[in-house]
Length: 360
Image 1 (cartoon, rainbow, N blue to C red):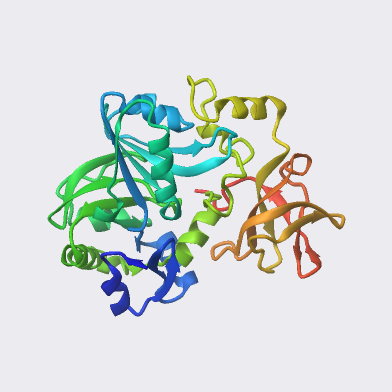
Image 2: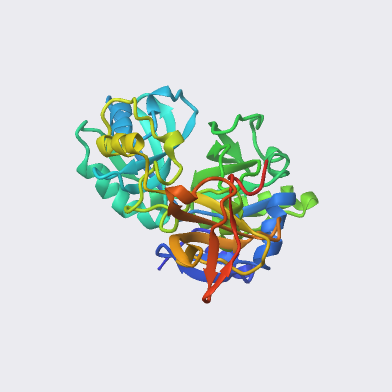
């Protein structure tokens, strides 16, 4: 089991630690609901150092990134970030990821923790442009500072004005440490992600300075449990639940990041056909006024007949209603359609709803 540079901090805070993607990670500190609400209402800090950072460099770095991802990286300028995905030849998703353009010849790809080794091998296998591909995941720590008061908190200890637009980044010093500061996150709130190198002493210094800066806002540490419920309220996909190698971006509602007019990229032919023919199933948001807990793997039904499966589910701490993502046969994907949660043999009424569940 690997440990992040913040492990001793989590221990001091009596976090509940679980194994996640090969790391010992905090699932919660106080309660998932309290941590969730601290991010929605003020500011919370997540240790997400388990994520992967893979650097692509060389004269054809852009061509390589465009070839292995479905979005169009050619529209990026220095300091821009893009949400994207990598696909297999059959259109199945290798991973979803963030693409950071540092300059024309250097990109940072931020990939999911559980996929980083697989992703790294996939990139090397498809390196037809002879670029340098370096996995620096173990060298980087990553904190996500999220919530309405995130900017005010970080600004106190940042040497640059934090007026970053969404999905932009710059290099700055935070708490005196060199960092890549990115206005991104997985919560739907105003938020920033801080990438930096250094040992446990450096990590603890940054953590402590952040919490001193956010003291007036009642800043809270937040675990992976609330990270999951926060992203689900926004309808954000989680790899391994809502998307994987058996799903493609068109049926997963990721058509908006899949640029089919772009020149050749891996999986393009299949995705073009899927778009032309229409997907047989679609990932939809479902909401129920009953508080029965919808869980990953539960069936979705109409008139007693299975029409799909839940991929992620919870009771929303903000809405206090059951919410879920799930794949349904396309004929049942229209907004307002009743598609029931099948929980312990009982049909719980739920309805297809437009995402996100929480309107921002």
